[in-house]
Length: 289
Image (cartoon, rainbow, N blue to C red; front, top):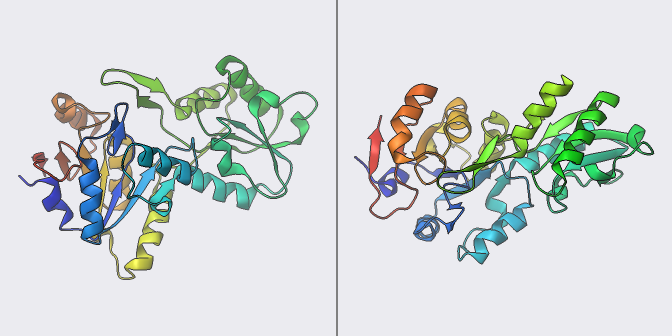
């Protein structure tokens, strides 16, 4: 058995998921601040890789700061929304972009020469000008009206449909989950028959983005030098495994301790380790491959 702190000693760079690892519905995971203080003191490189496209990296970090975790700067946040932005910059050259989400989430799709409008503002007068549909967040719009408009927009127009957060659900309490924008995209995809472009874990593109940033500090970095820490098998752990990283499943988010072995066995997704949390003090693995 190894504690989480001893695992960190074997790696140069740590990739963390955000929700379920650093914070949850109650706020910060108790003791997580000490983990990041230790990483800074040891001069360990780290990045937070999140499928949360509801806010800009600056606002995502600000939510940590409000809860007392002030040590993390915005340049350590890698959001799936950043990849969606890259795609739009390259592929959508003109017209209007309709989005589902909050005004804060629209930060990711702002681009010179493009007009962005919330899905509720799509009408017969402007539908012919829409050149892309982007799903950013499950809030900020009326579900009935917004989802109907999204379906009919894709039936009417042959345009790229982009999902900046592929998560199907997210925990809202210890026992309950809420439907995320990725789950809504599955429904729209099924109804329309249109294939969405998805960005975020478990896709390797977001890990490659983080890898390239880490290599600026460590030019000789190998994948064996990186540890991925997450709470979800089908995004964090599967994505890390596919990219060739060692992975740690922590039990502070989507998976309860009593369910861990069954969930791993039924999914076939094997983390390298399981830890109670990503807190560095007195945390023992309950599983060691």
